[in-house]
Image (tube, rainbow over all chains, first blue to last red; front, side, top):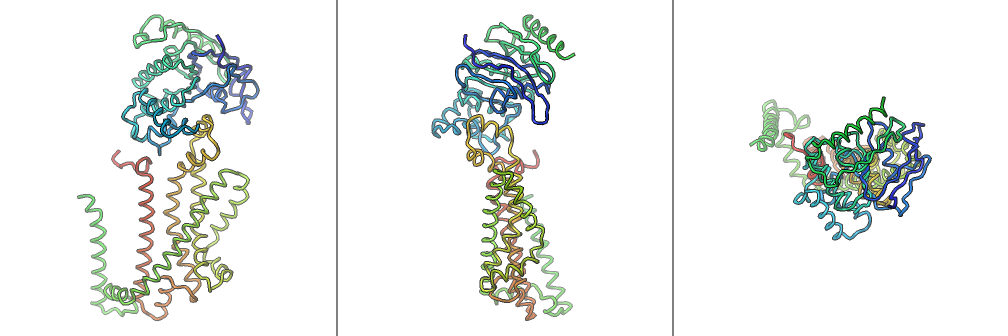
Length: 246
Length: 261
């Protein structure tokens, strides 16, 4: 199988001399769901920004062997424009790429329907709950029809029920669209539930402490959380995380 | 009922004060050149209605012109600042100097330079100087307060510098700008009036000149009438800008949230 993304000895050192992470070697194949797992401040969010091309690596190389795919980014905060309606927020990527107004609205509307926000097209962000705002943020990411979806602790600020239902919806979207996802999280259970592969990071500067493949079926259901297989995998990942953070 | 009370209370208080004023003036026989009764002020307003309205129009025109130039110039310079730190570092101190120097002290110079035969132009410049700074400083702040993550998102989707400015930074700065406009609208009026007082006589025909002229002739009721018109003008400008703010922000901005929430 080809490689979608490869990081070769990638680090990031800020102007003030702080090294955020690295050196990092990582190859991601199309269709993988990779979680970067580590505590706050281990540089995993910075790594995500370097992958997105928003920050330049210093030094190292981020390569896309098959050409740079369409990339979408979901932040920890919904990061919506408060003066725009839900629909106008979701169509932003298409608008910036010069799609016609009609096409952009149609695709944004479709993306909103897929995240369960049909009927909320004309609502403003302040009228929505935290979970719904995050759904708009995901719809905006999907509207760009990305191949690679980068998510930076997107559900960390949400309550448990919202988080679980968004987890399930995200898995469904990932399966349906054949997405490749890199998902930054500090939750062992979230990474176990979602991923095909969990990359455990060391404290700052973050490096790879463990790279664990999970071969669970892709159509995971709620009862998967209660299965012994899930508990075993979570225990293993948790042990690796503890080992990396003495 | 609450809405009715909100407007009825100040209105009733105003009527009561006017009635008391009228009563005191009549009862104690206060001479009209010390304090004219409200009825005398109303009579002065109606006697000199045409000339007062012409003056009101002049002052309004000068104020609006000064305000519009301050608004355009302030926003344009703020945008320039947001594009280049170098330009900001070079120009900002001078904008501050212009702001902190009392306008009344610069007024005579401007009057001399522009010339008394073009007094309206001089007044517009004075109004502009006082109204300019709040627009500049607030818009600069607003443009800079844009959510960093949204800027990153725009860049990720290949937005141009112009798209980031137009679709992201300017809307982000809008609440700041509208707040500054409410301050600057009043300041432009103050500038126009201060300039005219400073000019004294000449070709000025605004409300400040009416006040000076009436004062010299001891027509105190007419002074009050002109003063009242100035206050009304200030209130109208403030209300119009508040209405604009409401129209542009009420659907999405936090400031427009109902209090009970």
